[in-house]
Length: 151
Image 1 (cartoon, helix red, strand yellow):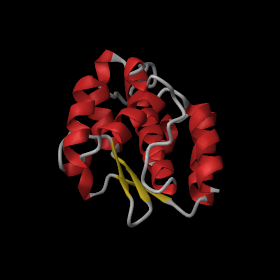
Image 2: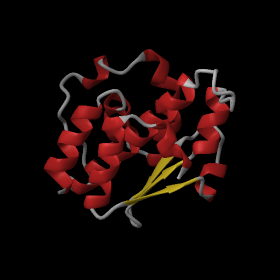
Image 3: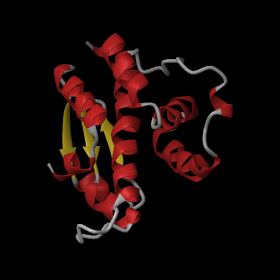
């Protein structure tokens, strides 16, 4: 799976925990064709996370040139993994938000508000999406809640 090349050590540890929780990860499935702005999905019934690496590369302006810093692509993929892992943990919590972050509405980055609205249109749940967007930037917290709720 190509997306692993864009991850750091802690995100690879998250993948190990996902596998231990009897979930799996797929890459570039038909779900990714819904819209190029989506970089990940969580398929609750199938217990699978989907990472849309091709969409992330397009959004991030990925270049094959090794001298080029693909920071944006790395960020899109890492955040997608963490976001969808948060949904996985919510599923382990009777399909409810975890509630580990207080005053969550104040903690979402303004740059994520447009994406939040798109996600809510698909999932229909503002609280769960809000939590997932805030958790994207907290990989250590993701590991902690994944262990606590799903293992």
